[in-house]
Structures are given as C-alpha cells and as structure tokens.
Image 1: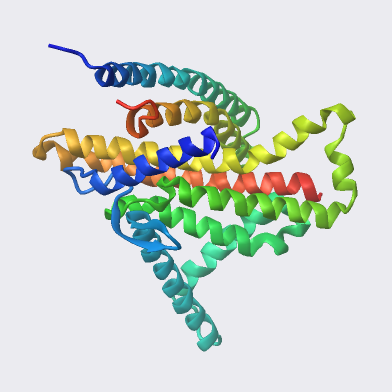
Image 2: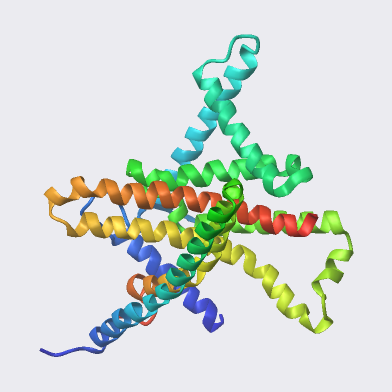
Length: 85
Length: 253
C-alpha cells in the first residue's frame, strides 16, 4: 500500500488536531478550581449566591477561551485542511 | 497579493467548496452548506444555511416583538394575561441583569444588550429545531463582537473624552502597544468564544447523528441537545452579554 504525500499530510494533521486538544486540560482544571472556590464562597455566604454565580460564570468563560483556541486549531486542521491532504 | 491574503482566499475557497459538497447523514447539518450562489461585482457569493436560519430567526423575533407591542399598546387597561406576564418577566429580568452590572447608565444600553441577548439565545437554541445555529458561523459572531467593540470604544470616548487616549498609555507610556492589543483582542475573544462553544456542540451532535446506528440516535440525543444547545447556549448568551457589559462598565464608570 503506497502512502502518498497527501495521505501523510492528512495523517499528520489528524495527529496535530489530537495534540491541539491537549489544550482542553487547562480550562478543565481552571473551571474546576473556579467552581470549587465558588461553592466554598456560597458555603461561607449563602446570601451572595447570585453575585458569586455570575462572577464564577464570567471567570469560567474567560478561562475557557484558551481551550477554545485549541479546539479551533483542531477544527481548522481537520476540516479546513490548510496544508492540503 | 500578500501571502496572508492568498491563504485567507484559499481558506475561503476551501470553505465554499466544502460548503457546496458536505452532506451529513443525519438531520443536523454540521458544516455551513451553500444553498445557491450568485455573482456580484465579479465575486461569487453564497447564500448558506446560516443565512436561511438567521432569516427565520430574525423574522420570528420581529413577529414576536410586533405581537408583544400590539398586545401591550392596544389594551393597556385590561388585566394582564399570561402572555403579558411572561413578557413583563422577560423584560424585568433583562433590565435587572443590565442594571446589575451597569448601574446608573443601564438605561442607555438596555436596548442593545436585550437585542443581542434575544438574537444569540434564539440562535443558540435553533439547533434543537433542526436549523443550523447561525452562531456556529464565524461570519455571524465576528460582526456581533465588532458591534460590541465599537459600542465599547465609542462610549468610552463619549464618557472619558480625551482622557481615554491618555488612559491607554497608563500606567507607563511604553505599555501603550500592549494596552492597544488588549483593546483589539476584545472582539476577537468575544466572537471566538461564542463561535467555538456553539460550533463544538454542533460538531459533536453531527458526529453523534452521523456515527450512531438509527436506533441509538433518538433515545440518547435528547441529552446532548439539552446540554449542547440549551445549557451551553444559555450560558454562552449570558456570558456574551455580561462580558460586553463588564468591558463597557470598565470604560464608562
């Protein structure tokens, strides 16, 4: 079975897409820490639950951005095929 | 043409070609799909599934707004019914959300925040009804981000006048480039966040519909729809409008 250059490029793009999704670890840890600390804060001060929740959501959304950049790189590699393949 | 421009053009070509060819086996369309093309000033433009679902959503929202307005202005003296109570609840919640983060300036920005909130929310929920979410297209979210960006910048200039340009060079003048980059990255991060979240949901759903045998599609897909479209969609709508208001509040308070 001969492997053409295009096949090799596509295979490497798929591996690269998988590697790019390692970026998902960071937001996972970050969002978990934010949610844990928010639960902690609600436990200390149940009256401020609304403010704490909205602050937590905002922080989590910002923390998620780096993971989304990884996802975008993966999607570009797999579907847009910037290197051919 | 520069290399960068060439690459962008190639990516657009690939996207258009993919748009014309990609078919998924399920009911959900994962890729932007071209419906028909037309030529204007020598360029080929595509009417895609994004345009169609956006058109449906805008018409639905306009009809809803017209009915709501008619309901409220025609019979102001009657005892409010269920529909009007729901309307008032929606408006009160939106007003409360804007007032909670913008404070005294909330009345200036209620319209804009309410509008993008309604559009993004219905856009994210469109996946349930088999439409392709218009917010899963970077061509929709980038203009939304740019609208927020210009709103923020223009109001920053209106409220701070020339002090705004001075504030860009604070705390030290040599930090000016990084401050400017920080400002410019706002629309990019806003739009990419919304786009990435909705697109990942759309992709996972289309993978599910495309890969599973027919008897596995329906029983479990409700969970994915509930998480990807409803939960994630509502959170991202909230995040987009809250971040816009947070950036705005930094500038005008």
